Image: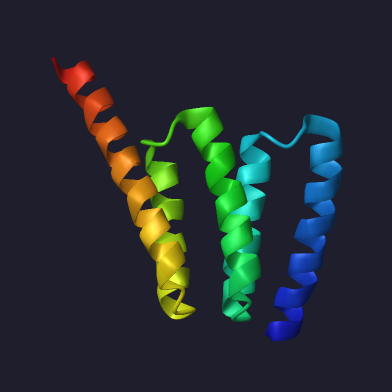
Length: 115
């Protein structure tokens, strides 16, 4: 299984490079591919690469959709879990601060839609 995951990771990385040379870095495809690659790196316990790819995905989703979008919350949740697994409490605290700001933004948008 690990061999298949490593092959998939190589293919995703190659595909991402081609995709970004054509479409640019800030697309849903880039965000989704980075997210998927992060999940594979996590399975290998490569936490630094996992964090970097999740942050890349989060940055793109935030630019495209805003910090309060559910896609961003999904990435935040995964990032916090990786920090927990890697015992990186400093990073977890930074993420908690960013998540708090994103939550306030989401509540503001939600309330403005309702009222």
